[in-house]
Length: 234
Image (spheres, rainbow, N blue to C red):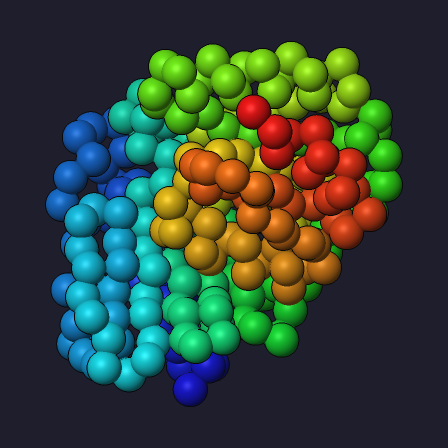
């Protein structure tokens, strides 16, 4: 069923994205996921907006209906809808939909990664000094201070750093070769469930950071060790 699952995920992501785009500039309200209950009633559900249903099928939909909420509320067109389907082997299909740009990133485990139906690959970059790195920051003041210390160590050693405000889009852009690396602590499963598979199917490598809180490092395989070593510590 992978192909039909991916088609369903893409349709739902596009529908949610169109709804959000219609309301862009106003309050971010009115998005729910009742469709998944009727289309795949035995599957579980985990979503940022508080939804959590148990699975009797061994599969779970992991959904972020609006990744980049602060951007959305401020009228900044850097937000997306993220949907992944997980089974016993991890993420099986993934969709990250960027309605503002009309871009949809997709992946199926073992089937490659795509943007608008065209294959995408990570950029090959083996040196941090020529790498464009994306990251994000938490809301807790103490955590932000620690993250700022990491940035102060990374910035002189990298080409530059970007902080765009949507983890899923950062990872999707990495998969499409628009960034060379990404890292962030304090993420939740719905923040990276879909985009992580897209990166891996585009030839990238992802690793969860050591220690707490949960974090992720992603880049082309040659760059990950150097980036991970620099950003994993507190």
